Image (cartoon, rainbow, N blue to C red):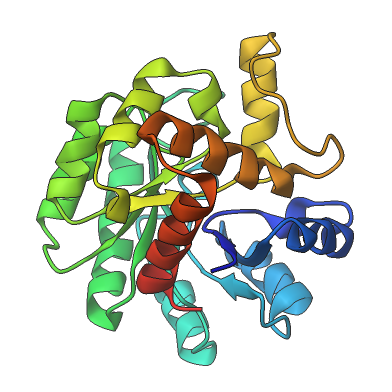
Length: 261
């Protein structure tokens, strides 16, 4: 089975067509582009709606929430008009203060719950952004027991990972595993049927390089962050004692089960 990158921002790349072609030659042929807000939904749809190798999602990212109380009519209207949307996301909570204007914790939580309700009502999976907020994310999910999805770019210990797995969620593994031993340990120990592999291109590569200042993460293609997917698969397969091609097939099947494709 060819590779499925479960979370990447193709619309943020300077030349997505070139990057996709290069990645496809390395065995990767499906990408899911999450949504961050209405303007981005429209841009991604214009760029990729006719591309069969790309799936699209829509959601209000916690960094870019409207100032008004949770009002999801814009998202509902978008979903009514775009039946090819495969997930609600990227939604969630980010309690790392990037700047003084970051939405309050309660404002983020209200929007998170409102979007979980849409996922429940439409039987769509969710793509969850969780930064320093795992306990609160789980509190929200408890209110919507039928909702499934993935915690993208998971960072945390095994106990936290299993709290999500026990809840029926998948965990997205990215190149942060090259810098976080606890995260690598967690993602190497949870059931393989609950792991997705993602690049978060181009964001996670930039974050890892900025935080590390080291050379422990060696990208396969310096000009193409989509190739980080193969590096991540290989590292996780090694940690699990599996052949990379076997693990690639498993995680790609997992993504197809969750999102279709």
